[in-house]
Length: 92
Length: 105
Image (tube, rainbow over all chains, first blue to last red; front, side):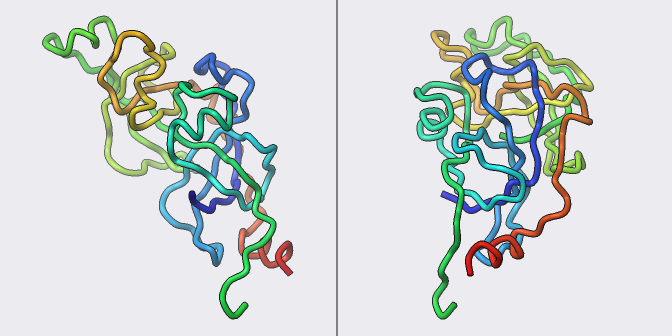
């Protein structure tokens, strides 16, 4: 799993019918200190994440599909599966 | 999944039979500001996308799932069309670091 920040969302009326109801969020993977890591991604939301939230994302099809649609087999490679309350780092 | 712009059509007469009748498109992945990110890729279309459209695509094994039952060999499939560039909304005003600090302590 990766940490990411919700940085936006995308409206797509025409999309795979298996997740017609899902929200498509723009997320930026981050390091624990909040700095950006790599390029932004799209993820389906399964936890009602919102603007600015730091979230946990999975980048694996079975998990992403079951989390976001309730069943495996949808064409999804990334889903938001948790909203991070806080991170305790060593010495923090 | 990633945002991308469809930048071309691709025609391949000789191909795996499961790809027969499938539309192959050349796409350029984009970042959240719709700037090019990375190199162009070839994608199979699953939603009726065309050149110039803003789309998003799925990587890996999951890319073949829209074609259930026909084992289409693809690791990059267009699975959604973004309504317009204005429908990519980016929240500008929050920094994750500030947010983590505020929520963590």
